[in-house]
Image 1: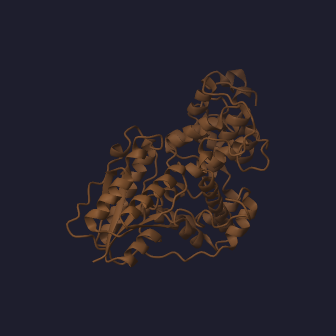
Image 2: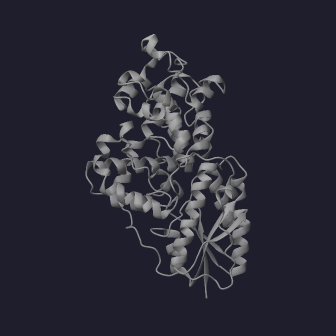
Image 3: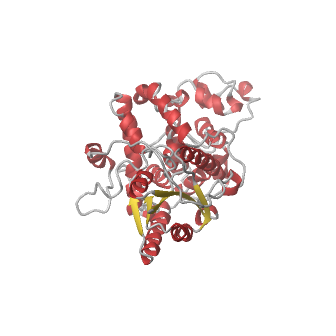
Length: 440
């Protein structure tokens, strides 16, 4: 009986998974494989928050696969070495995997294809990490789209296959040792944020269902209001592929203005992925160099990290990040602009701190959003003004978001919470909250 390997990477789901479906259609036996990549586990990409979410997602995936008569096969080591060993053990002639965009992922894919080819085995890379594959919507003579609006027009007009269900049944090769599912500390030891979401396709689908029934309709009107918490919070599930971005788009279509606004955000995600696919060095190098002299690490950067800049809207967002491993998108713009445009601190330091804590820490989105704010990325207005106090009063008009996350200011009533240094000295005496570290 023919055998295929379905190599899971950032597509930890059984529904609308082109890799799993293609493997099941091609062969009577399928090895659903996840490799704990030592190149990532021991490097700068691995962090405790994402380790916990990943461990939970793998356990959820294993449970789904067992219901299909199979189960997740887990190995640890070099991905190419482990895939080759399993291909030899099971006599698999084809390996299926989702194409990814980072420099590391592209090098790993190339090496895997080369080594499999030497043994007359094939690697088939399939779409699934984005809605529209990187490289499909290219301006004439270019290797990627550099401006979002024309890209989005093409993206919106591009046909997409309908989401597919999970295979009805899967069969593992007889006698194959599955391996042990990892605990979070097996992936990356360390303390995690106390209010992380739970990983897995099951939680992802429940969240999507609730979002579509009670949330998306007002998304276009409320998504930037910080205290409303009116975003989908699906980003960690999209990052790990617990939810197919194609299915998210398909199910949001036709839900009105809110759905259109939500789909546009998923198009931004695709846009950033296709930029990084063509320019993988943008994770560390300015996409559009400006020749600016950035400040480095220091006390002001530490104050920003710890949420004690004295600017409440910034401090609230940074404390939310520590507590939840997540931050509202509008808040991400505010704190990134404050760091780069007001403190003139290198965007790479900010992006690295985000990546340390974000459970949705996605190399493409995190990097390119930071570059956009800093003025070195795809924003055509690189010197776009961004006043944090105006943002605070516009998107947290009553100060509820600040009071929720900055405990020192919980008792300060009304919008004055955004400028506590302007309170009467007697009212300020017991706040124990710092003055702003820069003139705002």
